[in-house]
Length: 151
Image (tube, rainbow, N blue to C red):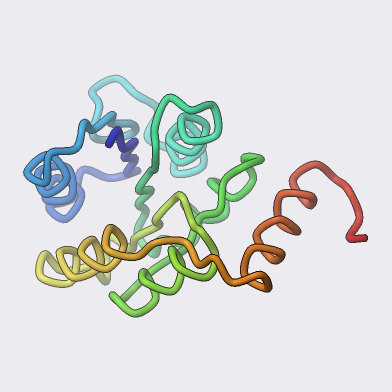
């Protein structure tokens, strides 16, 4: 899988994230502080990673900033992106399962290396729900991306 990763700071957990993803066999595209000369503003590098998901250059993305909040907000402004700020494995599982999230947002401050592995395990193990209500909610988000009112 090709995964786009962004971080506004070159923190140990961001470097561990890239190494962990590569160790799991993923191709990693880096943005922000992880790529010399790149724009390190959280809004800019999170948008860059999210756009790669939206345009199909990447299958998924992981966006990081100090709290994870700004990165998730910026990513969610890109149509077609469903970014979820996850601080634990249960939330990561639910984000993939019920929200069909395609972008994981992480806090550089709160995420330890052990927690990072647990979150990634849950994220990659979960599959999008086929439940009709869950699919309708995801479809509604897609309509919101297009500026269409709910039916």
